[in-house]
Amino acid sequence: MDSITDKIIAQNTTYGARNYKPLPVVLERGEGAFLWDVEGNRYLDMLSSYSAVNQGHCHPRIVSAMIDQAKELTLTSRAFHNANLGAFCEKLAQLCGLDRVLPMNSGAEAVETAIKAARKWGYLHKNVPDDQAEIIVCNDNFHGRTTTIISCSTEEAYRHQFGPFTPGFKAVPFGDATALEAAITPNTVAFLVEPIQGEAGIIVPPTGYLKFASDICKAHNVLLIADEIQVGLGRTGTMFCCDHDEVKPDAYILGKALSGGCYPVSAVVSREDVLGVFAPGEHGSTFGGNPLAAAIGMAAIDVIQSEHLAVRSLELGHLAINRLKDAKLSCVRDIRGKGLLIGVELKQSVGGARKPCEALMKRGVLCKETHEHVIRLAPPLVVEEKDLLVAVDEVIAVLTDL
Image (tube, rainbow, N blue to C red; front, top):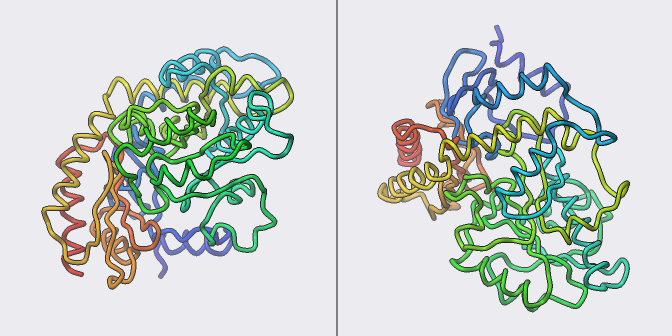
C-alpha cells in the first residue's frame, strides 16, 4: 500500500507542472531550524528555503505580527495609504542607510523594478539616448526567471526556447573588475551583481572585488546595484554581504528573509535620485507594500537585529567551514562560503551532488544540490551550534562513504 508520502508526491506529479525536481520528502511542519514530514520524521533544514527563513521556520514574533495584522487589514492596494507602509519603509531605509524604498512581492519583481529604475535614471540623469541604456551583469548570474531577467542570464537551461529576449544587457566574468571597466560605455547605466553568486554554486569573488567595482562605477557614473535577495539580511555574517568589502551600493535588491519566510516581501532600496524617477502610474503592484506585508517585514527585520543573527552566522559559519576542511575529504574539490552560506563542491568523478543529498535526507539532514556538483549548506541562522555540527558530521560521513 502506498504511503502518505507516495500519494502526495504522485498527486503533485500528476497535476503540478514539472518545473522542479524536489527531493522525495513531503514536509508539513517547521519550527526553528527543524522540519517534520507527513510521516513524523524530523530533519535539520540546511537549505532555509534558499535563505528565506534566516530567522527560522515560523518564528513566533513574525507569525504573531502576521496573525495580528491579518485580523485587522490585509490589503488596500496602493490606491490608498495604509497605516504600516510608512513605518516599514522608514525602518528598511534606515537599515540600508539609503533614502527611499519601493516594496514589491517576489525577488524577481524587485529585480525588474531595479532594472526599470536604472534605465530611466540613465535617461534622466546621464542623458543616455532613449532605448539605448545598457546594464552590465556577470556570467553565471541568477536574478530570477522572468523573461527580461533570463535575458541577462548566461545559463542555457534558463534560456532555452524562451526567446526572443530583452536587449540591453552585457555580461562580464564574475570577480573580474578589469573586465567590468572595459565593458562600460557612455550608455552604461548600471552594474547589477550578486556579492556572492548563490545559484552558480556559492561562488565567492576575490577579496576587494566589490570595492574595486564600486570605485569603477563611481568613476564612470554607473549605478552599483547589489542583488542581496539571497545573501543579505545576515546570511553571510554581516547585515549585507556588501559590508564585507565596506561597500554601500547605490541600490539594494532585497527579498526572501525580508519576511522570514512567512509571506512574499521584496523591495528595492536606493537613493532619492534613483527611485525618484518613478512618477505616479509608471510602476506598481497590487500587493506590494500591503499592510500585512509591511507588518511582517518590520517584525522580520526586528528579529534579525535583536537576535544578532548576522553575528551568529559569522561565528557558526567559521565552525562549520573549518570542520569540513579539517575532514580532508578526498571526493571534495573545494569548500567555500561566508557565514552560513557554504558550498561543498564535489569532484566530477562523484557524478553530481544529487545522490549525496538524497543520502543526507535519509540521515535527517535536508540539503539541495546546486549547479549539479555543489552541496549548498545554509541552515536558518537560529540553528544551535550542536545541531549544526551534527549536520556537518553527517555530511562528512556521507562524503566519506563516497
